[in-house]
Image (cartoon, rainbow, N blue to C red; front, side, top):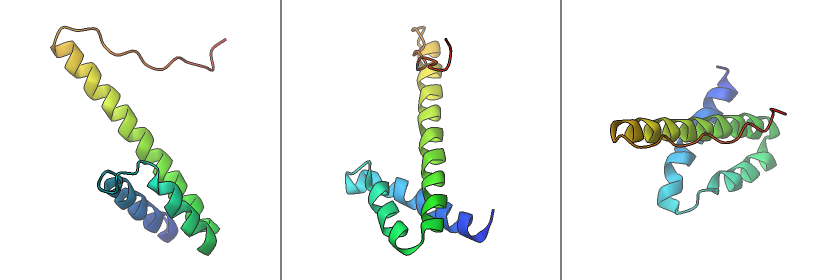
Length: 86
């Protein structure tokens, strides 16, 4: 990663970890606005890291629920509908 990506990803990781304590699951948006004022380039890298980390967190949660359901002999959770299929 580049220096900017490293900084942005470290900040994204810390912001996501802090959101529960702050009781604000959209706090990253405020941080993004602060970054946009100072550096649109850093803001873009930060928001990319946020999206990737939140998507991974969601995917991991789905995996965990599917495994838990399988082990309990229950129906696996449904994945979101594929909106790209016609």
